[in-house]
Length: 224
Length: 221
Image: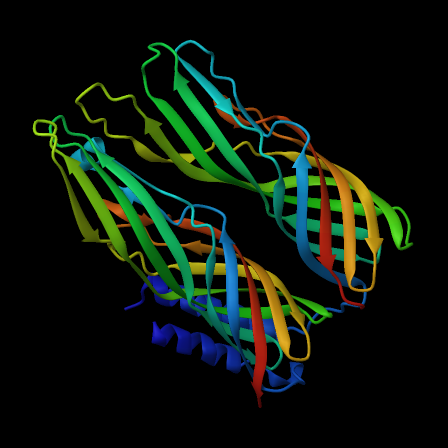
């Protein structure tokens, strides 16, 4: 992953510098909040398991997290985010003697790395870009309740929740507007993320195509 | 070894290089804005035309629509709007034959992405506009959950699944409204009509009318 980031950075920095007149590098840091347009997780169970069990995940109501941006020559922004999304899911497994229900409470962290080019240098700027997911992780717990219909006894187990297997690499395309004030930058944008398919059946996979509205608020820091 | 990942990384880099090699195009006639739009549907947004033989399918009317907006004003005459309008989907599929069958609750979020081109009829601070466009995308995802009446002494396992509404594009938009420009804000109340393609089962209603107000941040050019 580091190799690809370096490759992109080298090509960007190799661009003709004559087109630029502002500071070479400006560092910004802040926060991003967003609204996912569709579900983040889904079940991809196949075979017998898919036939006897069911699983559903709610759409995450929001995403949020810190963001760090390096703006090169007042034109190219390289942004690394750390976006949290809550995960809520429910499931059931059919059995005449041991019916099971489950409830999942978890969290997802995504670490997108995107490079954006500012197409329009008006008071509100337009930018487009893309990138890759530098990392992702899911954590949480799944509570499983099993009732023995012969005895009426209900047992409750708690398991760790993890999305499995990895769906990296994931690619990102984004575009938005930038409102720049003296000390703060506001960046509303639309972002599309395409995750790789899962290589095996799982009850916790990331939905492959994800759309999201995000708005970032960053402080303008170091300039060189 | 050349992987898909490295090819993509190289492509991103080359595209960035080409883009950076060209000067930015002049912007003196362009104003970019962003904000939020909220509205009230005057018609039902969703419905089902499944014949009431074994199941009855109903959908609640969403109380409001709301979402972020992006706008571009060209030559102070042409307005291009891209919205991402959310509305809730709350549906129910109830077994009526047999009456003791399962009831399914459907909960989803609908996001529409209309792209609308409007023409300002004057250049004053209060000015009417009218135009039309298309719905560039429509995403409806959510969950479906069964509710069963368990017999005495038994336990019923609910069915849990994802719910996706079928695509009904192309959809066309016609709108008209007023714009009030202040120094930092543009306020745009408008009436919007959307005509959707037809589908069976749970679907987006073919003809929809809503009133909404947009608030967009603007800066002087």
